[in-house]
Length: 241
Image (cartoon, rainbow, N blue to C red; front, side, top):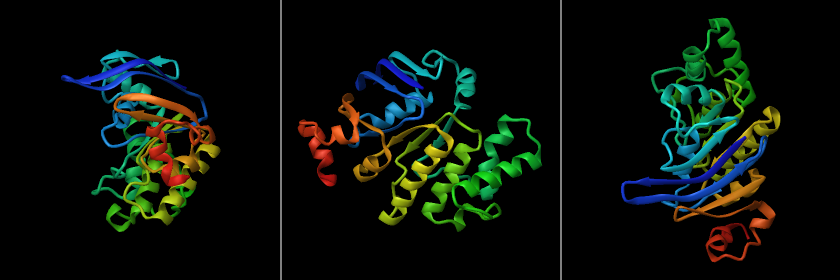
């Protein structure tokens, strides 16, 4: 579903990513881990097409996006859903309007059809009947759920999660983890989760990829990853040993 081939990214004189090669299978959940400034968020932005690589190719399904213009990338993004770190809901819109936003902007569906999709997706994330609430009336965990409902409204092939447990307590984090797992199973989507939370990564992922100082230093299954004899990896996994 995603293929990253010999990708590097520089910002001025700073080399943020160095010759990244990574393939993510259709229907797989991959967690991308790394410390602050490691390059994991840059890698996510490249896959979404928000920035372009300095070198290399990025394939999303059958589309190579690194040389696309914004209009072309917008069409590819219709295959993607995005759950942002801080939910990124529109404060002036109701929950229902937030979930409907992409459908209104990019489809010719009528109002009744959109309303049905909104209700169905909110129900799928465990938020039935909240369409008329405002984001300010929601808890942090509920906002994450609304963000996921918006992400899946289009029926995407890929869902990207940017630090989904950021700012949440452990109980709510577990609920969001369960939601990521159940969404992947129900929709058979490819999921890419950027996180620093190793407990979550081990729960939700089929494989884990670690970025360190702009380099992809390890990619493996959760069980194998825990046994990698590399001090950089071991430091991250100390919390779940």
